[in-house]
Every structure is written in C-alpha cells, then in structure tokens.
Image 1 (tube, rainbow, N blue to C red):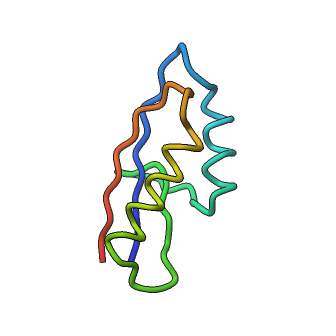
Image 2: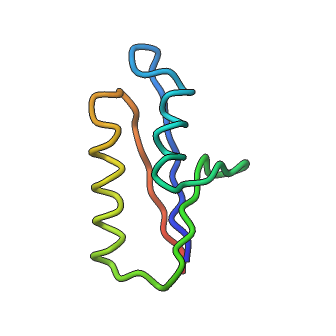
Length: 74
C-alpha cells in the first residue's frame, strides 16, 4: 500500500529543497514520474491511519505555500 504525494511550489513559499528535506524526514521517498513523493506503508493501513498521515504532512508543511495532492493505492 502506497500513498503518493504531488506538490506544487509557489515562488513565494519555502524552497523546494526545504520541502523535500521535510518530507524525507517524515519517511517519504522521492518518486520520479507522475508523483513527486511516495510513502510506502509497511502494512495495509486503515482509512483513519491514512488521514492521520495526511494531517501530519499538512501540519509539517503549514505556512510553506505548498499545494498538496494525495493518492493512496492498495
């Protein structure tokens, strides 16, 4: 099970390198292609667990000016 994250970065927000460092610190990996980052669950997460993960990412990037898109695939 994977949660993919696509990001849009504005010129008025945090630098891409800072955003990348924060996401890597949270356990996400860089993903080339359709998605920018991926979080690989070690088990089949529940909907509530995925929501809590998304909440954590949002909180970590609050104020950064980043627009996020999440896709979770089992």
